[in-house]
Amino acid sequence: MLSKSFYWKLSQTPEPSVKKHCKMCGKISVFTDTNIRRHNANGKNIYQFAIYKCEKNHTWNNKLSIYKTFSEHLVEKEEQKEESSILSSIPISNLAEEGVEVIYIVLDDVKGEHRIDKVLANQIEDWSRTQIIEKIKIGAIQLNGQVAKPSRKLSKGERISIFIH
Ligand SMILES: [Zn+2]
Image 1 (cartoon, protein in one colour):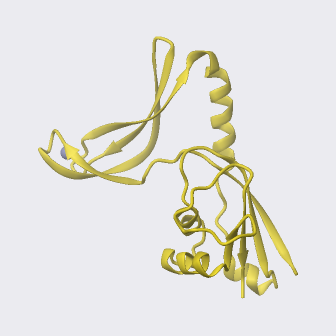
Image 2 (cartoon, protein in one colour):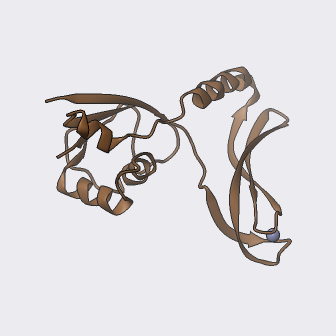
Image 3 (cartoon, protein in one colour):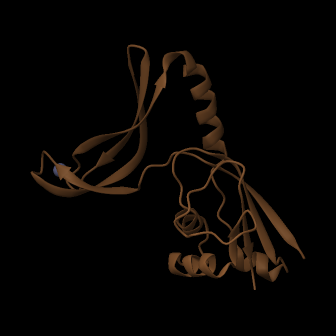
């Protein structure tokens, strides 16, 4: 069986948009991630924020994580690595044309919470989230060689198998 493997590092990624109350607008507004990140040092901690903006351009700093200062250097290195290893989308149709029958995704690292259905829906453009959920349910997409729930959270070291028919 012809197979192809991908190696993924899942980082803690915030939602692209969040509905929340905007103090400036005085109502619930949709905040969109500007993809701008900021680090604030406060005593021994470093806070990482994602900068979101509402429809009227008001800013909201969404706190992503807190690092201790002693690991500052390490954190910086890790971030550079994450930036250079942006997840590649999986071209299912192209791979199927090449005769690939099974795709393996090895999770080299997982930070934060990632549902299998959401992660795959983000990275597979050829299939909708509904199609992906269906494939997970019928076992055409498996986790560690077994049928898993679409809501299953992924962990480091696990392997997703996608069977292309
Ligand atoms: Zn606003």
